[in-house]
Length: 442
Image 1 (tube, rainbow, N blue to C red):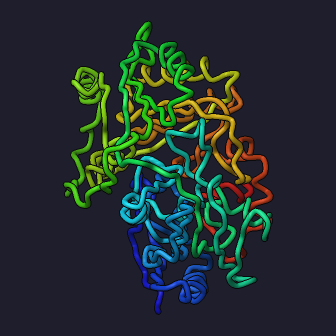
Image 2: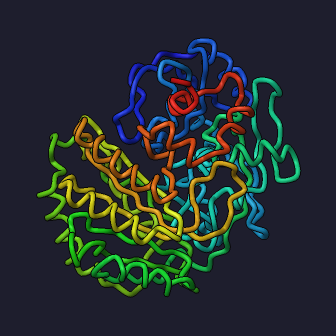
Image 3: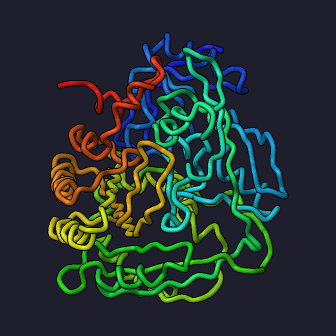
């Protein structure tokens, strides 16, 4: 195995990109050699899955990367208990093809199925059911971790417990996750009972959220161009698993965006037109059944959808705001975006529950989360994001490192005060561009 030089490894937001020394181990037995080889070539290295981190947390510019997608084997599946153990490079896409026909689903899923199990642990991903199920790490029973100073070890709540807690949400820095064991959720159908309900303003969203505690899955799309009395208008979606309807997994394939869209395609005029059509479409008010694939993974229907932001890429920005300040802070955030005229094409608003994660640096907190994206227009976009940062900081919130490629160091340290514990436990040859920015002293 020889580390090869790749000059253009991209983050999903496509703003961050550059040279890496890459290795692709085909089995778990090859992980140690790949780590050492890429670390020697690039002075440090990092595990890298399907590359769905938007910012620089999954990159190690100028250093090494160990791609884990070749580690994609199902190790064991207890169909009676719903416990699955698999290589860390196995995607949710591949896993669900096996577990859904058997009547099991992942207990927590992000908005794409094209993430690896190792990535789900390293970022402690959350989903539409956080208010009831917490984060992905809450359902992980144990995992394997390869460290340059100890070789491969097992981590669980009662075995290497400190590393277990620091690895969940630890950005892949405590060691390379080699396999993951997770407890699944029993389902009787691949279908969900779904309601899409238009909401006229932000108060209507929060009111509906409070009355939807019995619905396992809730989320809202928000029109970021709406102002005044219409601020926060959008479509509130909620779902629960159907009691019958078959256990057919999702289909593969789908169209792919072949080229970068022209620069400036996503602007206030085009986004405004989309928002009006999206809110007026028949599905905006819906009560019926829907397969899990379009409900959980609507963006997966278009492969390489990130290219629609053009060759300069885009910034994803996501905050968590504590309950005491969430209503006013979200109002100010949305008003700031609307006033800027720099519309967010994909704006998602949701409330978080208070279930604690076993991860030391997990992102969610009891309150609300708002996720926005903006085409990269250089200094103007960065200025807007800085203004949004200040609102979050004043409200005692934090930003999501897995999505934010320009998260200020001071804001990260304030939002994740236990970051020093991760730095103390970091494998000495592992590093990322993100972590370098967060730990280097000015």
